[in-house]
Amino acid sequence: MSGGDNEFVVEMISDYLSNEPKNFSFLMEALKNKNFADIAYHAHKLRSAAQIMGANELLENLECIENLALQNKCVEDEIGFKIEQINSKILTELSEELQVINPRI
Image (cartoon, rainbow, N blue to C red):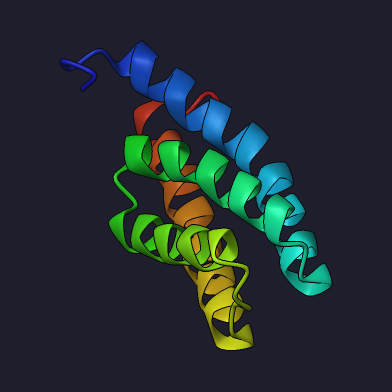
């Protein structure tokens, strides 16, 4: 997608690292409160960011969560825990990748 443009990659990773933790916390709060409308909204919003980053495992779980919420079905706690782990790993990997691409950050 970047066509080898490191500036673009740095910008995309930086945007993800600065925006998605907040959006992810909104999703986790919605899951905790079993607010189906908010769950669906935030899961959908996070899906595009996950897809851009190539985070396929997170993307699949977000799709599952969104579909359950749209059907007003509860999301099991283990799925919430799983996406927290996946997201944490992604944030770590992206931070490390950002340091490799642009060590001045």
